[in-house]
Image (cartoon, rainbow, N blue to C red):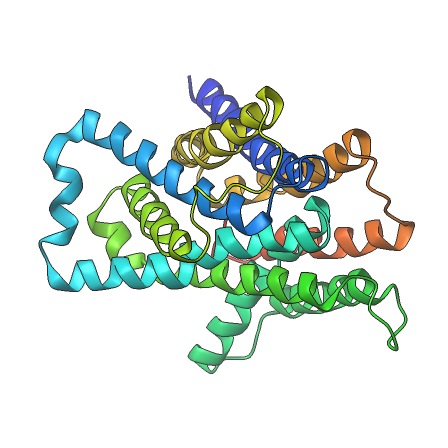
Length: 304
């Protein structure tokens, strides 16, 4: 029975991470082949995912989904989580894809666990452990190789792609660390749902969903629905069930499938050109998750 739960949990985490990775590539397809704006897609994705997730929760729990707004402190923290965390995780990720590709944006977001380590070390005023120091070094080397191809005098990716990718990683680190008190009081999916909805409302003020820029066709509509349902709804739910069965540390390791699936989909489907040094940079960054698993504290759980 325990073995079956462990296998089920592992498969759920791998399935979720694979969906997150492929979703970025589907977004890249919409940008490159269908002419959609990355900012528009991020905006619509958050808004629709928030609406559908809250509808799912309302169907299960009724008016309890609104209880979080009854306490001023909870409401304030939810707004901060949504506007500084969720909004920039989602928005930064898709804008980074627009300026580069899904594989690069996904791997840059994987710097979030290392950023959490640096923050934790500074806050606790303690020297980092060997695993933490190695993880930081790997992250710096990987980012350097990815951004410059080893040439300090030039950038291999655009400054905009690097900025939005790193911003997404910073937001993911904040998104992971900030809502701990809320997570002890409320369902995780509830926080994600409200975060998506609030983030989507804010971005729609700048990039309204009705200002469609791109080719509207059955293919593009299907891709959009995939990004919303299989990228922003289903994997969050299945990943949480996986964590329940196998724990956050093992789940965070299995989530490393995300950049792998994103890279494979980008290269095989969209024929994204990557050089050997890009793969080396990817390897260094993804390896940080495995190195951090050597700690007693669980690594962060990246999610797009």
